[in-house]
Image (cartoon, rainbow, N blue to C red; front, side):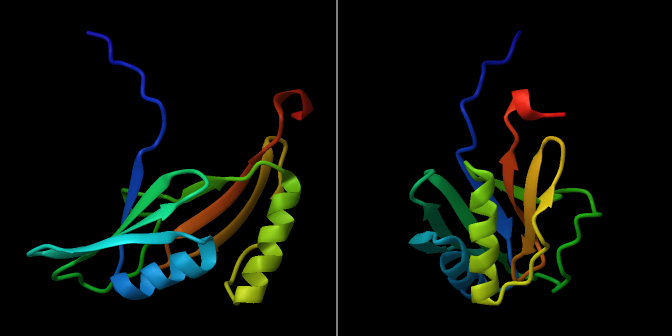
Length: 138
């Protein structure tokens, strides 16, 4: 049996140590809008949306969290990459992150695209990525 195609990413859920602090950070830094908070027996979740793309991000604080920071070298998530349409958008994002006091890498240009890397309050690596058009790739 052959699997059907899928059309994109519907949502992204991240585990965080302080759901309210993380929600405030994602709203301030990435411009997400808060949709709702849900309190379950063993976790609290805040659902955010990025209006321009429709991407929904769920932030989950689990009961009994040990307090360790995110580490992409463990099995699981490595990083989350958000696409930008133009290379110049990365320069604008870099200036914005600087103004917000968010630590970040410089924009790194490669043969296939350019990246700007930063981390959320739980040290989850986030990346803004511009893909070089194929005819321009070296």
